[in-house]
Amino acid sequence: MVIMWKLGWIDANDYSFDCMLRMERFQIRFILEYLEDADEPLMAAALKANPKVKWLWMQKCPECRDRIEALAASAPEGLTHDEVREAEAAIIGGYEDFVIYTTPEVMYEKCDFIHGWNENSLYEICDLNGKQALDVGSGTGRLAFAAAKKAAFVVASEPVDALREFIRDRIAREGITNMRVCDGLCHELPFPDNSFDVVMSGHVVGDLFEQEVKELTRVAKNGGWLLDVPGDQHRVTRRNEQLLKDGWEELAYTGSFGQTTYRYRKQVRK
Figure 1 (cartoon, rainbow, N blue to C red):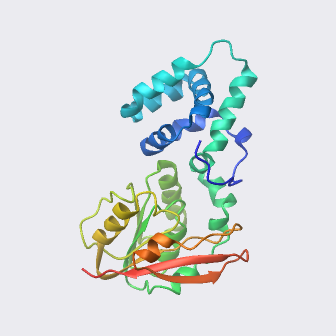
Figure 2 (figure 1 turned 60 degrees about the horizontal axis):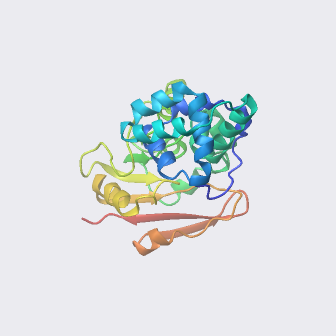
């Protein structure tokens, strides 16, 4: 499994493997593409013991059907309940960032970059008053809800269904009238060119950097702003060399946990 650091957001034992029923196509593809050889027996055991997960993954991600079938078929017979559960917990813990998306209320509570963030760190780097704004990879809506307090209209684009519904429920609960939610990946946004004055994200850009920045620029208006606004974290974070190389302005500050948080902005010129 590809684990860059232990996040500590969840206890894998609190989740059944049914959480994998809520994985999106792009997540299934990522999990299987980067599954390391040493972890294949764990995934094999978990898939064999959970046929409904196996079936749904094959329906949602048909390009991975053969891979899923082969993994499940490779699992040994006669595994005990404890052996299966150990395999399930290892997979769940290895992809805790994806798993926590299935329980947005836990994400909202446990993720330091959400609960430790102050919305003023967005307001002080960009004038949102009267603007049309897009939050890409919105998650639980950290940036979108902050922007909606000032902007004319905000769209929260989020590719995970559970998170979209979490945002929609909060919009309805709080009676917010200038915000909508849609599906969309950072490199494939469902909007025409030149749609937004402000295009913002946090903890999103990087996997497909050139494609993603090109897409963010495409949907931004000439003279508009691209913003990268991560939340405050307990761990030490590094400067984003990709954004700096691409000409983004860095605006750092000391976050609520005493660590440096690096924000970035770039004005769009077409």
